[in-house]
Length: 270
Image (cartoon, rainbow, N blue to C red; front, side, top):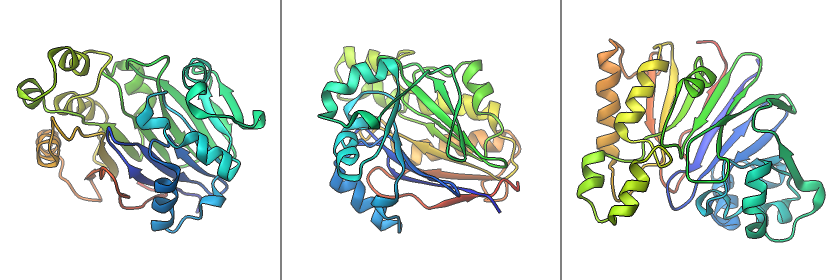
């Protein structure tokens, strides 16, 4: 049985890194922690770092690229990103082997080994940010974080996934009453900021079918959200759709901030 495996290694403003494995490929989406931390996290889930095949970058902010350069040099890994993201991050990555600089067009899906990868343009204050959908013949994963807006094009790209890794960054009331400066609050709340719990629920209403799909809430703010707020907000949304939280209906989880999530084996048999 062909299957895709998924594990979030870290998710939040202190660093983001997700691991995806197919029958023939092992990749990271972002590497926003130190190289040492990511290597230790990989070992904690039983993955040998030297078996990695590539790193795919969503955008150039430090919490997504901090360990990209060192991992590429240490493990001889190719780095995939769109052209504008490459221009924005290249000076932060250090010296790289030219063979490991892989540029793609954000509007052109492509295969990496046996994984069909579709970059999904997102809305964030970065050069040209994108999320990803990754699929094989039977399974599909969608990763959409660091976006202040989810329009119909994103909905259409990610629907019918077996696993959704979706941003639920902040509670709006908590953010407004919190310690951030007003300009920073405006940035987070803008369409080029981050998805709130309520925004995340609006997306969930469009995509959830209750056919055993996993929904992993990600990139929670430590200052402007709590795990309970994010979970309960989504729980209410799921119940309003006459669904329940259950691995056979909707498998709802919160991505840990600085440790590995559970390991998802997606066999596309939902």
